[in-house]
Image 1 (cartoon, helix red, strand yellow):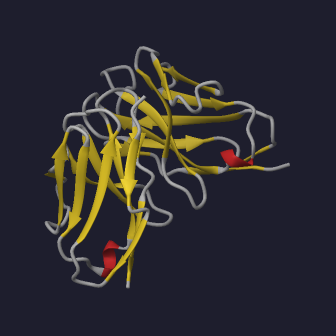
Image 2: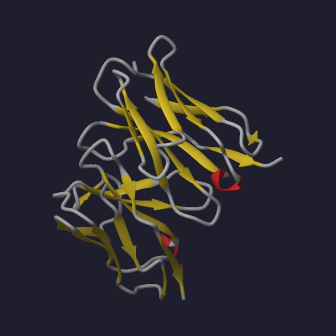
Length: 107
Length: 119
């Protein structure tokens, strides 16, 4: 089975900072990679799919890159409303898997 | 508009079986080839995929849970279900049902239901 490893597990940054989260798959998954944002008590919200395609309605400060085994989610200018936990997810087959999550806080 | 709604007991005793149902409204569960899945969020931890079932009843389980999980689909009721047996406190979580077309990310989620394992 393919494992998804995210890093860091948490980070604290200032408003306006550039934030980068990485996700690594234990085997190649082409670009079948999504990023979700989850706030406490809420359902996960899809930000990025196909590794780099921005979901409709998501602010352009979010971007994704990567293919194969290594992927990145970038927030170009961190905003207070971005405080949340972020997850990567593979969907190259019926066997889904999530990364462990990255909790983003404001310094 | 497609909607998914989880239902089931909010509390289960240790060693017993957790059973949840997801009712799908706004579309037929049997009409197209989708994956209907279960995901959980334990308190203080991350999202964990549990297992999925497709419209024909084929099942797909997380390797770490497959010895205890059963998923099924009931097309006559437009529902799919999860059974997790021999539960412990570690199975306490918010359980979500979700849908994903093959080769695309999850497009619909249920609101989630908290299941607590406690005697």
